[in-house]
Length: 580
Image (cartoon, rainbow, N blue to C red; front, side, top):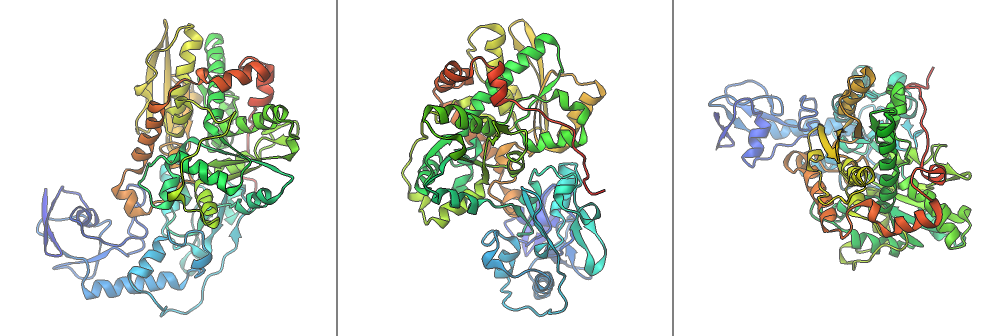
């Protein structure tokens, strides 16, 4: 342990602790911009400078470790003036359209400008001007708002192990860009959106589809259906000041009905269909020893990663569509026929935690009878903006329920939102399909938790099934290398591109670096998902009465011809670079 003083306060911390961490443990705030705990700890921006007695100049607190007897001052006049100059320099080359910026009110640069009372800018020299990259259906890159903190670079390179972006050029011309400064759409970006979650400003944000949805809601000739992913309900409340992980299902449904949607359905129902198809496919592959291990296919960023980086492993992907695509296909077929609605007049909107879903819904493979399964995807953040635009007091809304028939789902569908959830839900179904016996204990705790890669052996009747769960593309890479080399010691793998799964998707509410360092957002949201499962009266997908009825009336047996027409797809090799 090391003893030191910070602002005359005695502090005792383990050796190797940084001054920044020691100060935070003592309840002393030091401002940061480039710092992102465990991801980007490089001291680039210098906002966290402090004075250390007996040393010349300033110490960068996010990288300087503590020493015995050290005396630190965090807000001397010299420190405050230096921080003000640093902030002034950053703002001098920054777009100042805060009122119309998507991150207004949740921007770390804006927060610091207010905190340090930056009312005018002393530095009025030349400003760099950059083009806006909005070619991708998922993500917009506006370097005019970039502060060169490199948090996005560190996330893409060190966490996701992609490296689609990096710092290029030198001096005044330095910027964050891609190979040959091309669009993210034309390089090896998977659209996971973790760079957006890391960005402290509005330099990276989702491609907004709000106006498209508003236009359809106003069109009397369009039947507009909305569906909401499992993890939306445990994150949306954060956009309205609620505690992290608060389950706002009822209020969310009320808000959607107030916005004017003709039907409000639950993507959890689609997840139940996914499980029936995926579990059926898994059992068939196990029996035939065909293309094992099988890997899940409900995460579009992960699928795109496979197509670009490991095309030889494509046969291992499940052929199942993701839950919202399945439900979209059912809405435009079964629901349309049942209610005598022209499918071409139905406009399906998916509220997703994921910006890669915007890309997925436009894939040519995601069509039935020439119609896209889903017509628009909006994120959790976009839904919150729509609710605010409509002047709806979200916190005062009464709880409502999903519409039938696609409003009844199981606990298995709910846990899709967190890492290990798809695996657990699939095992609940696979057990009964393989054994013909009822599964008494539905929890598979061995696939739960936050470990990057989890492996387990599950006993299903007289057969041992070896499974793996990975989240974050850095961990997915390890799994893919095992499959590619023929050394995989498992038969079924669940892989999610985002660390933590969908609850931490690129379209979820953005938490600033201080909250991310002090609160376990992932655990709180995951606990809420498992709580929904635990309180559900039906916890296995195969027991969903709506699902049973639709299979009996319309689809037939899982895995059969009609199911493949509606609920399955195919994937193919994609080039990493479309720039040559």
